[in-house]
Length: 197
Image (cartoon, rainbow, N blue to C red; front, side):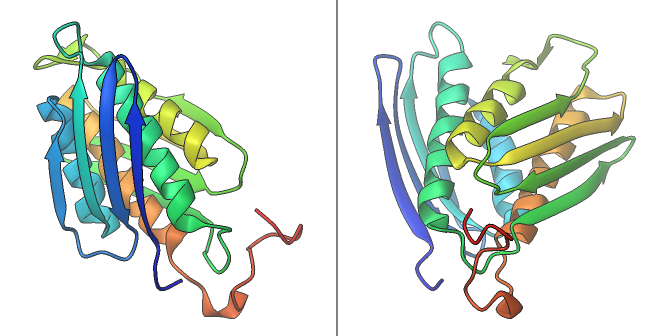
């Protein structure tokens, strides 16, 4: 469990991405994605998840941000899957409720090996600044498919769409932190009656 790091590259006709991840970090981060609002959200994940994360992306943002955001989610999921290895000794489950003023969100994650996204979030407008409010779904959908995790995201209340999205990413970081923590009582075994995850 002492070297839970990964480096993932994703190279397509739409995006060229490099993700470097250390699960046992201290919140060090560097982002160069061409999508400032996503970088603001990734900053929340790193700060609240206590990860070290570097993400660079050269994407077709002249069209829109969709491909970059989705593919960063995919690459981040691959990085988590690689860094966690066989997932022996981790708690596996994590959850968090996070408020920001009037907004409140809940995120629950299970590194089960079974991808699934259950997303209940409604927004009042189409964009926060230039950022399309449909894109968090695309980010998390890419993440779960490649991290092989089950993820429940519920925005429970809120009026300001920026606040609502930010609580989602903050809660995601906190839930990750809980799920990837190691449990000495597991003695290096997976947290599953099947014996594997």
